[in-house]
Length: 260
Image 1 (cartoon, helix red, strand yellow):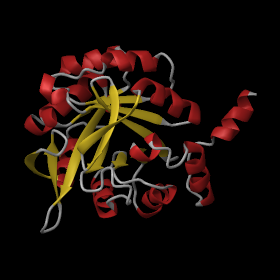
Image 2 (cartoon, one colour):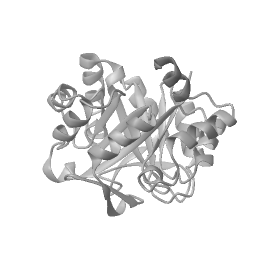
Image 3 (cartoon, rainbow, N blue to C red):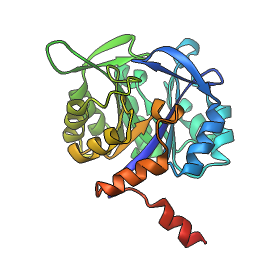
Image 4 (cartoon, rainbow, N blue to C red):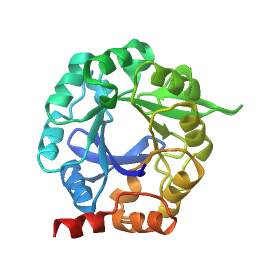
């Protein structure tokens, strides 16, 4: 199976933003233009997160997702503030392929089962924000790392998979936005604990960080934000690095030659 390279776009109001450890957000451009740019570069999937959804009690990305879905033809995951089956329905209706649930699932894990039973496990993503604990392990957080759930991350990932999630998005709060590399023990333990695909996020600053995640863990995909938004590398150079390391990723050049 080929590994996936995913662009993550955190959105506040109409702006693409990025912070460090989920704080100190800075504007990074237009979330529509960036998504189309990454699509043209050959990204495998997109993840949109409404980072201020908790302030409004709902996800506010419908217009952006609708616009982007008409121009890009890769899977789009949307998360942030999704609290009900109706919220999932609304996002799928405007073009999302999958919906990521965090806070609502920690409060009522049966929501994962309800979504999975209604729309399929392939549309049900459990998003986990993980904060490293001084005595070991990681605690699952919500609201961009501000509120703790009391749930241990690896156990929560395993429970989420059993309840119907078809994919886990695991984000390291400690590594987020640092560009210093991923929390490899976190990624490995979560991916070992479940039998569904895991997307690792947080800490990518160079192509070697992505290669290391694929080489050293069982993760299915890596999601990148700051590294792409700041043009630390291109998706093309990342694919080249993966190919050089004998990591199976989609071959864009080959697809282009077939089209021609």
